[in-house]
Image (tube, rainbow, N blue to C red; front, side, top):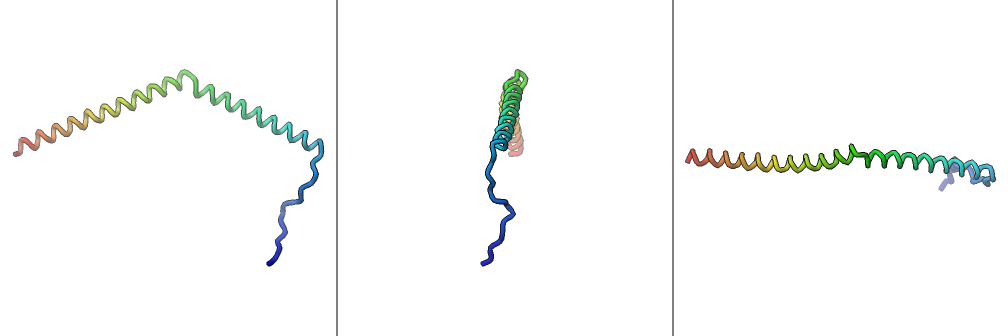
Length: 86
């Protein structure tokens, strides 16, 4: 069995400056995520999105009722045609 060297360098000791830089990077990432969350929250809970959600549900229920009524009328017309040809 052959041992293949890896391209990953050995872990070096981190200095205080590197830790401070990493902490600043993480704080910036957290701040970016907070801004993203707040903007997403504003778009989700805006009056327009709430209205569109309620109206969308209402529209779906109307489509369902409309489909049932059209299906009933179709079946009724087919029954009438069958009764005429008997």
